[in-house]
Image (cartoon, rainbow, N blue to C red):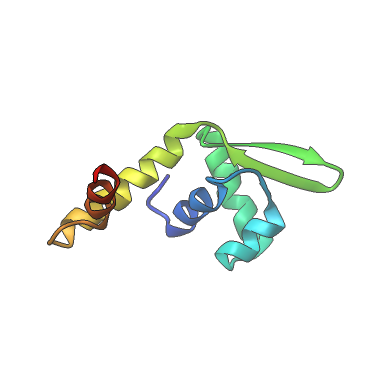
Length: 96
């Protein structure tokens, strides 16, 4: 499910709370129809949940696991780049 960059971007957009399909489409610079298709697949995988308010559909992360998967993938990618990963700098600063 996370092999598609648009889905990763949708998860990142939803980490702070619920958003409408149109708002998400603006954030990821895709059409609302394309975003709806991605979200439908993510809903089937139980990564997101939805609610309808009138004609608008709002999505939110179903649980913390999707956010953690993306976070871990980003951290792993930082390690693959070599050097000291950015997330280690933040941890080091927080511990001082």
